[in-house]
Amino acid sequence: MQLTFEQPENVPIPSSPGFLDAMIDQDCAEDDSAPHGYLSTSCFLDQSYDHPTSPTSFPSYGGITEAVPHDAVFLLKHYVSAVISLMTPLRHSKTPWHVLFIPHTKSCLAGLALGDDMSHASLCAFYGTLAISAFSLGGVSRSQTWSEKAIIYQQKAQQYAKMMLMTAYDVPKVAKYKSILMALLTMIQVTMFSGNRRQSEYYFLEAEKFIRLRGLPRKKSRKVRLLHHCYVFERIIHESVFICGANSRQRHHIHTAIETSGLGIYSLDSLSFRLSGWKNLDQEMMRVRGQEEGENDLHLERPGFWSNSLYPEIFGIPEPWIILLSQIIRLGKEKDAAEGNDAPDCLSLKDFIGRAKTLEDYITNLARPSLDNIHSELDHEIIENMLNAMQNALAIYFYRRIHDVDASLLQQKVMGVLDSLLYCENTDSTVVHGSAGFIWPAFIAACESEDPLIQVSFSDWFVNSARRSGLSCFTETLANIQRIWQEKTCANGRSVTWLDLMRKTIPLQQGF
Image (cartoon, rainbow, N blue to C red):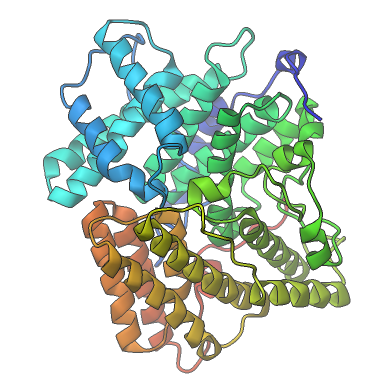
């Protein structure tokens, strides 16, 4: 069922930037005494999960008419030719970046050249795109000048994001839905690529709030669904490793805003990544999801098949694989809740074991998609190896997150991930295709590797990826992995994992 609602926009929504201004001020003293451990400012793990940085510390820009940056055209060309391949492993021209982000950014460039007044959302997306490209160029060329420009453009994008969010829920609309969501997604990419995971958390949650309150209660065009798919894929990857953020104050604020708005009824999944009521996952995965369920089960809580899913043509990964990762995340949260006595309605031991066995069987027998529609032999090989890496990483993640098995039992799958990474690197050494599709399995597998030679191979892959992409997230993720390896060598025979280190460095808060 399609819903076209304009009326809900009259519902007042709490202003997140104002809330976060107060929150950051309140947290300053706490940050001074926060533990400074292994996992700070990383691409995947961050010790400041409860203090997401809002874009509040930059000078305000009086108007919304800007001169065209003299290097904008050059940066946009680099973005098109080099950066897009980091977002998607596919090279067709129908990706969201070709269909939406690039045309939007070019339109902003033309508007600036003509002296038009631009919305905060458009300027946020524009400067965010320049920042991403400049970060990449700075890393590839090792140019301090480009790195400094990247920071300047990022600061401008952050300031425009702050102003955009202050009016995002106003009636009448100040900016179009797609423009605001593209700006938020661009800021997610900026913060992820620059290695600032705590700011990524802030923008992920703002995007979730905006989608649930303005996106789910509306009829969704293909372009809107493309943007929603981009958000969900990256959010689930983020959620899989950012395990200690579940009880943060910002999340509580976002969930409260959604619940009190009256628009939470359009969300067909829970707001806290809890499990749904399935019993037979194989049977549930064969269930056909209707259009409303396919579009409004935002974080893929309900298993099933949806023929209109766009994940394969954006990221090369079938939706059932992403649903499976979502289910593992949710079961892991059930385990955390039971161990911490955080929830009275936890699964019983019998149900937990049954769910875990079902997920294990499904991972083992994961159906491979047909790649007949991929006509490029090079793309075919890259996708095939990315799927190999993802399947092995899903298994590793499951056994670590759910059963916490000894790492020695995971080494065959660790090698499976490494072989796939190296094969793709040898096939096309000029680019890093599909950053999230490769960096996530690389992180999950590398953390479990025990052989020093295998560790060197993982290190080389991250170093080469950082060199080819120019992005610090590869370097900083490797730094965290190396800290984990170091901690293991000092563990005196104790089993130490990245989950242990996260819990040690970032104590879980109790309740909301």
